[in-house]
Image (cartoon, rainbow, N blue to C red; front, side):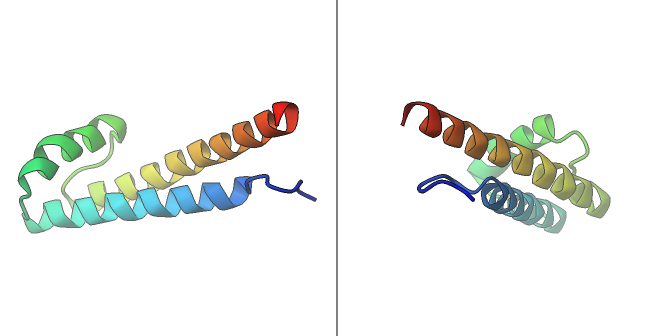
Length: 92
């Protein structure tokens, strides 16, 4: 049983993975459709390309990027919740 006020590790992992995967999917669909947003294409797209090696403006690249983003964000979300709970239970 989780202590009062602790974050759900599984819940934050799922939420992070779904949110980041959906964001990557939207970005990939916009890029495949040729939609150009000045600040988005100059800043966010190169960032995605550097963090997600399989991501690209194709159907396959978008699907690979969605999976990479969802797994990476889920792991980071779980780590953040675990660290928060560990620090809160130790010092909080």
